[in-house]
Image (cartoon, rainbow, N blue to C red; front, side, top):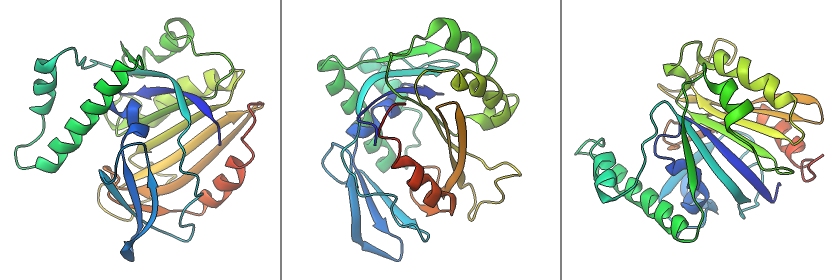
Length: 250
């Protein structure tokens, strides 16, 4: 329910996910894919179709995304899209028999370019996770004051020394001491505590919220790596209750 936030993407590559709200997502019921539950995003539908299952259904019907006040990404080797040649190089990493993924990439690049034309830019920094994260948070990056911080990573920690725990050990003490709420969202392979995913390669969608000196942790759902399916878990109900109380900053 926050009207305005700032983003930090851990493992951002070219930074296209930092413009996620400028894409289009259609949420449908898995048992009845023809039933449209929700359209999200600012682009004309439909770019992504997300079938959902589980008792929760949807955590809310709010469709207006928050205003993104700042977009920052870090990566071991950020891929800067300076010109058309860079765009072609990035596109070359998609397998030739996956035209739909190439189309999604081109839409993402177009969203980036349109945002840049309006003065809405992304800042990318070379940072090695988790070793250099503490220095980045404490000295390199200066978050905007008085705005909630939303941090996220998708399929990153499996490549890192120390995995999820290595990032958590750095991020948690920093977040605990921030004067504004910090929300950390992850789509990552499950650890032993989170259990076994319901399908091959599905990821654990978790949320950590530091607010008013308290820490909350939720395992919200199981999710397909490319958002091609989502299964809500009981924690999502508790998350919905808490999220409704987060309209204020403090």
